[in-house]
Amino acid sequence: MSTDTETCNIEGICELSGGEVVISDWGNCKVKLLDQEYLVVGHCDVPMHPFDVCHIGGNEVAVCVNNLDERRELHFINISKGKLVTARKLSFTHSCYATAHHGNKLYISSYTALYVYTMTGKLVKKLYENKSGDYTVQRIAISNDGKTIYITNDSNHQLITLDNLGNKLTTLTNVKGLCTFCYYYYYTSPDLVRPYGVHATTAGHVFVCGFDSDTVLQVDKDRRTKLATLARAQDGVYGPYAFFFSRRTSSVIVGGLKDTLLGIKVR
Image (tube, rainbow, N blue to C red; front, side, top):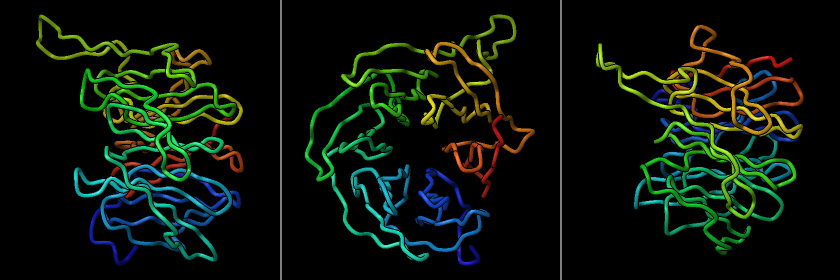
């Protein structure tokens, strides 16, 4: 937007039922509405940096607004005729960094733990926790049937799969090593360095992006191995934070650093 004063770093992406795309612009503290041609047609300001965004239903989205101890909030925004209006918000005692919605439950990441809440903000339970690093529960995605939960563990370069009770099912790990001859770090899977965003389609496909490797990957159904690398830096991927699979266009929509929104056709 011409009024933006900072780079548009896209931290979250979701799609409305009508095909419009909603993104969270971390740098400018805005939530933006894009039409089907990905042009900005509406926006609203939020009081602090917005992170993840998810579609709740109809024309409502939920956006994580987080800034250390000052704000730990989830803002519910209604969208109508290009106008974005914050209808209500929930406040938490922990960080609110990523969110997913399934059924009548909200799933909230606090960087190191995954919590389940009701839609009114009542804590149901802490589903999972990992204190082995600072960003062990980075982003979350939920399967269409609600039985499987996917978590990116940035600190340990992992994609973790849980059941809906919080039990760990599988772990896809990118092992980091140090070359004893040249003293450079290497990875067993260089296409997945610092896994960040994760998305599960209604058809059961799972995608994950590597922030430092500038990649978007598809993993197999048991989440143990990589199936394919869909895009790399040379395709326009740069510091990917978030992405979304659009059934309408059969495209993976990727957002990240440098004012970049990339559409990748998936066959």
